[in-house]
Length: 235
Image (cartoon, rainbow, N blue to C red; front, top):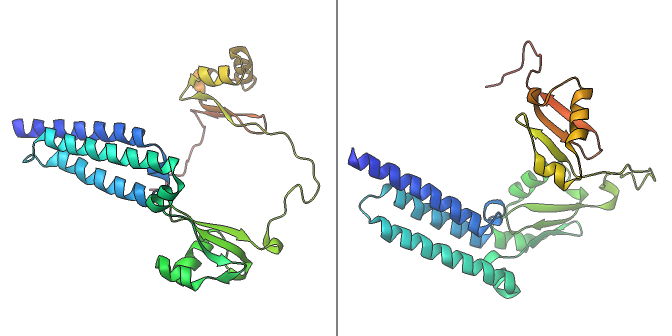
């Protein structure tokens, strides 16, 4: 029983430490995964797993190692932000793989990037004809950025000289049946205005699962009771 309690305690501690470390290193560690981020994530994961399950190693030794590596990762991240040369070495740099409609085979060989992978990436961006591509860049996080040739670019409202309506950033008003007071204050909206919008729909706040003021200024409401007799449930 004592052994089980120790395992539970170590697992909970490892989870808590990783949450703190992830917050410390920032969102880019999760979202972008450059060379530096990849190495940091893999190593931190291995150290955390040992802290949680390897009872033969002393807990404080593992915590010291984990914190030391976190400090190194944070220091390298800080240095990368301050020095472009170091940033290019730690994180890598974007690589052109299509330039002016021409595939750069040399760059693709250096990256170990095959034509099959390139075609797959293009298809995922709804490009089935490679002749549509003017430039393609392999970014630091492994994603491909595409610029189509002018004749294949989608038409915009500006091209058609159509008037565009003003847009706002969406504002969440109610979530899980509770009013989000901070969002109202930050956007100069009042409780009275929100209640009037709710009442126009014949609802109460408790009946609303989600409410948001959309980018076009309209208020969208989703009720808890959708009144759907046969909702689709895909397993």
